[in-house]
Length: 568
Image 1 (tube, rainbow, N blue to C red):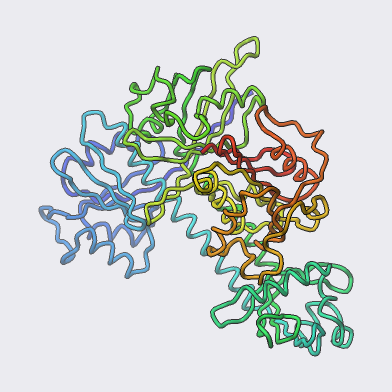
Image 2: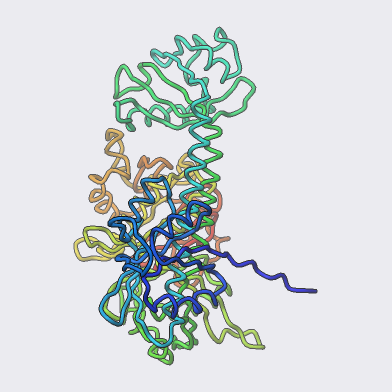
């Protein structure tokens, strides 16, 4: 049986040479990769003629194009001028500008996002060529993703522009009037809908209450209340909709107002397809640049790939034979956790957790957060002898200088098939990281958050102390409200769990989970708090986050299983 040959992505590149020996040196190495098809011209004028007859995935142009004998140039057409010309003609091809940095280095910069690499002009051009190929691939893939997003957005705009809007007026939670498009959308005559409670458009009282709360809290630029919901047709089928409401009383949606209903069925399908497309794009980029480290059972590094060594700013030989602690993992952190402890986890689960996030360190002292996928390497007797760790940088560097964990590459997996909104999970997660790192008044703090499926969570728990949020206005019970963060961290010192709805409303604090946890199996070292959260997520659609008081680590549960472990 023949093994199928994997088809390589061939990227067409137009290279505008500056009449130096640079391209002559690099061209054979670039083309040998099998990923780049290179055409070169000697001037921007020749490039413009080329572009009239064909398109390229990427253009590489020298910043200052030198004159070439016998060739006339467009006036003032250096690399930047050439880029302006392309954009004025509506040509969106990604452009990479390169220029000398002294006699021995060349800098390449992708104009669209400012990504820059500096390549030494050495005898061995393989490594610099690989970096240049990576930059070219990133530019081509980013442009492809932008084209796909634009195409999907154009299709979405066409669909929504052709869809008539439904309108109804309500007063004292009763429907007083609807227009013909809404009647057609709901699939019934106007007479069968007018005069009924607004509640009749929703499946449950809880969903109706949730929409009323959203209309009070969320506003568009015109001050209208906004909410996403699902309306029910007379036959029981569901219609995903967006509501925009001009309320008579902004603090009480049930008093009435005018509501515009937009059917977003197609928009939801396209949004889901776009998320899937973005996830595939992130996966493609992650595979193109992965940190690969192999450790023995004592934490000694036995292998690193070129990208890992460059990422941590070490020569490859400089890491082999050294312990992971003190090189790419901090000497000690709060819970004495480090990368080598993955071997112990693998003893419990041979394939490791879906993702194990840990704090690592580069040679210059910079802190980075890496999401590791771990695989056990076993001998013939089945004993684990080494651990293969494949990592991806998920460091989120803010303009303020703050360094924190980015959830962009994995939060989709957490919130999928739940009612938890992405921004709500982000807010809770980052509150947990602050609690883990800072504690409270110099003391370590452990706490629990249960997000989503609040009706079932509340039914499977009970209040063990005063609910600190009961009676407050809706705005001061939203976990996404930055003004509430310090209060949440203060109440985290108290016993019991926080219960947060999927849209971020803090239903309760101080809840005791009553689900039987005897059937839950977790690794050694995890206590009652972890077991009870695993148990309640196994019988609800909630997402659980536990901050360990003893170790400071964060564990994310879903479906009764550990989905993520974050070592702080």
